[in-house]
Image (cartoon, rainbow, N blue to C red; front, side, top):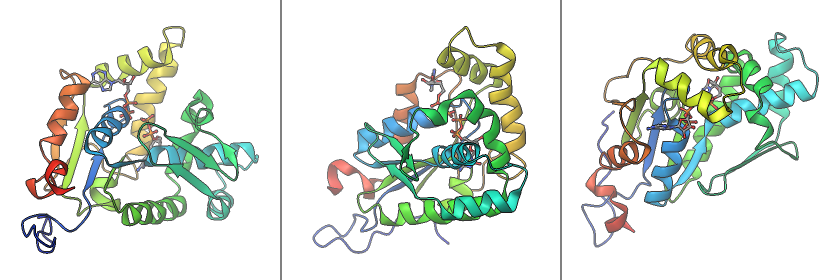
Amino acid sequence: MSDAPRTSGTPGHPLLSDAPLVVAIDGPSGSGKSSTSRGVAARLGLAYLDTGAMYRAVTWLAVHEGVDLTDTDAVADLVARSQLVLELDPAHHSVTIDGHDVTTAIRDPDVSAAVSAVATNLAVRADLVARQKQVIADAAGGIVAEGRDITTVVAPEAPVRVLLVADPAARVARRHAELGEHVDAEAVHDQVVRRDRDDSTVAAFHDAAPGVTVLDSTELTLEQVIDAICALVPAAYDPAVAR
Ligand SMILES: Nc1ncnc2c1ncn2[C@@H]1O[C@H](COP(=O)(O)OP(=O)(O)O)[C@@H](O)[C@H]1O
Ligand SMILES: Nc1ccn([C@H]2C[C@H](O)[C@@H](COP(=O)(O)OP(=O)(O)O)O2)c(=O)n1
């Protein structure tokens, strides 16, 4: 299917798309997906979907409920029954699961250490991918969605698809600066390098699929990365014109 935006139907503006803009961003840990996606969404007036936060929230729930993460059926059952609510405003992002506000708790090191065990559960992935597709379909004003399989599985027809990469050393250094220098270097390495290795067994986020733009953020500031992604938005979607 064509990557081109639909440009048929806006009355009085025949060259403008009548479909909401979807920006899909994938990449390894620490490449800057979350900060960049929030920045792009804020600048373009779009909603923001952090799919990693969904995998983290269901992991938090499984740990909270004492479910054995290696029991794939039990974890998938728990996830299927869970009520997951994400606030999609890039300036006020929050995550609630079964009534628990887990916005902060899902960033805890124990969740980061455990999340790959849940994210590699194929039944959990099918469940969360379906929910993510629904969120994107419901985003009437457009959305930026980020994760590991957005450009390939969740929103392969998005008009803007980016694989954000950065050198492993830069990604580990960024994560270390974010977590604090008191955090053990080995723990940071585990959160970035080991987790990427485990995650890449179920999602292809190291190589760009055809039509996906690779953007290397190693030598770029956050603002420069946001500028580069906004520059990829087809003119038919230019929010300054289309809204
Ligand atoms: N282009 C950049 N240059 C320097 N630091 C960055 C850049 N992009 C993001 N960061 C920082 O790196 C850390 C990881 O970014 P984050 O957006 O959480 O990455 P990801 O979602 O890919 O894991 C954060 O502290 C963020 O502020
Ligand atoms: N679409 C996605 C998003 C995240 N995941 C997995 C991979 C990660 O280990 C966890 C958490 O993702 P998150 O984007 O929060 O990870 P970072 O800490 O930002 O690197 O979820 C996934 O498998 N598919």
